[in-house]
Image (cartoon, rainbow, N blue to C red; front, side, top):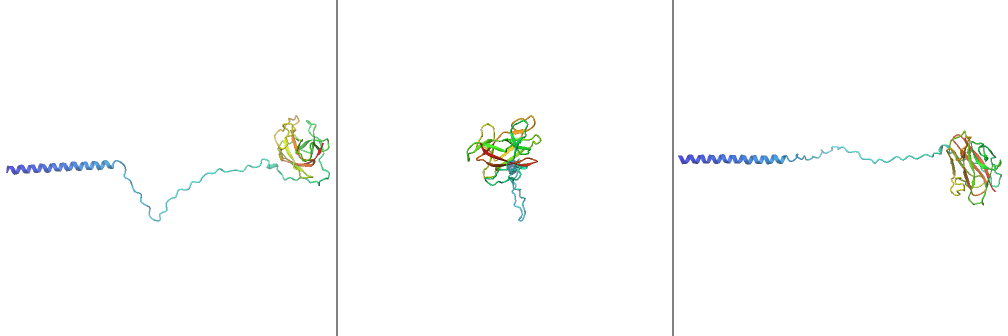
Length: 234
């Protein structure tokens, strides 16, 4: 009986020890599982949308381009159609008489204003040109503007008894800058020479290649006039 009781107690001790061991192992496994789960959030796998579902589309990015605006001609307001007379070759030139108009200058000018070509012969409307035919020559021809007009002046011209063009160039330096003139004369500002009486004066050269009859259309904000002069050899 004593032996049987001892054996029974020994078996119970082994069973209890096994239970404790299993509990320890189970607790360790649970700790590992929990610890692994704490490493990071669970990753969700995106499921494809149901067939036929319209997905939102992000708007396309459009490159922004600068808007280019054409620069208008600053002289458009005074650029009227060119209407110059014509004269048969060999006919008399209907030149505009010249006269003294600017009290601050002794130069004779052609026309009735308010802007005049100046530097012509006395009462003749003739501009005397040096140089041979077909040779580009600059001849001094200044321009006056009356005190009552302070706006811009656009001058264009050509030979009206032939086919030769004219060009305008500034008289600074004093020697004619032949070959550097422009087909249009654009006059603004106070002029080149101060005037006590308020007249404006621009010192210019007229570039021509031959004598003849030449006409100029002079346009301002409130007027358009034509002046005819004769370019004659000296």
